[in-house]
Image (cartoon, rainbow, N blue to C red; front, top):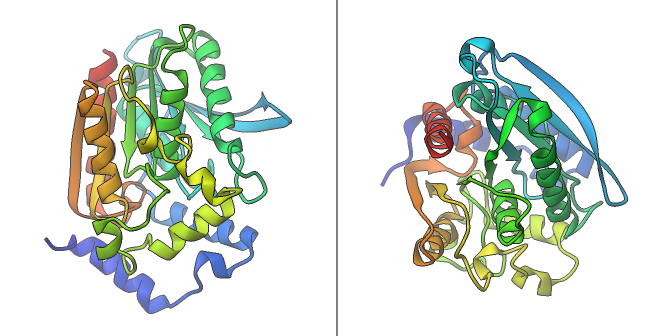
Length: 316
């Protein structure tokens, strides 16, 4: 198994730059750097119909959401499109609406769908369970507002990568038995599913040198959690849930050179074992984060297109 040549070239450039690690910077600088790199390397975004930022209430405050509408040509005269709720990656510490703007524009136009990107509050200022609680509130808000957004609430999909994938898993588990809301589909891209152990075989193989490192994951956990005991909470480590039945059908995308590979595969097996329909696609030559780096890695465009098609087929 070998790295994709484009991915190797990107990793070589990063290594040659020899810049500081995220945990070596002040948190504001780390976030600014993450957002800048994400924007510079983002998959080129297609034209969309419109984009609107709003604030929505959450306990003890409010959070932002960004709403994307496809072009009339993509909409094709359909009055109510699928509704996609997007949760960004960044270890619960980094990332935001701007960092994933291109990902959401691609999903919006290529599905086509109304996309709501959620700017949940970040650690360490807002530790667990704030990100999970914000995500559940945002999901309920999007469900209630679907008609006003030109979307069909019965065709609602949740999408997230890395920490965002963890939030998708946590939200679908939390709302599984809620009769007032129906989640039709979920897309988890190299999701965090088990913070309780950093000792899997994939952590051993890819502990450093592949963008996401074991040390970085440990730093994320230190920022996000209030105690080590919380690593066993299913809202932090969805793989540790007691049951997986009744969850929405899923597309799970993993990367072959990713410390999180094994826990992603384990989550696929847990869903399959509970009878949940799952499509698992492993990009064996890729690294963690490739999904949002389409300016440098062509397979990111393929993965985005596949996710859009899977959502379209699932909720048609």
